[in-house]
Length: 132
Image: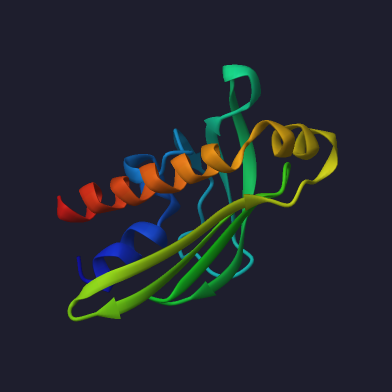
């Protein structure tokens, strides 16, 4: 899909449940997302329970890059977009830089394979959502 269509999904946290593997619901979004913006996201948590946490937009470069970090655990997703012949090359890094005890527990529980699965499912979700 064109980079503008992918960016429209990445820059709007209200749309994350449409495509992101780690989002069930988002609330509290600002009218315009910018660096330093925060929002609440509910997603899978430890032991099969859902967890709601605050996410911070750490980096934002329109149509190019967005990095989001959970302020409770240190879990992050870093998305970079590159336009290529009318389509979009998407690079995503998902990881955790643990914050506090909960972050350390989740850091131990989330294996590289689990993070890769989240990245793959989110990329597939972006493909589906951008095609609609």
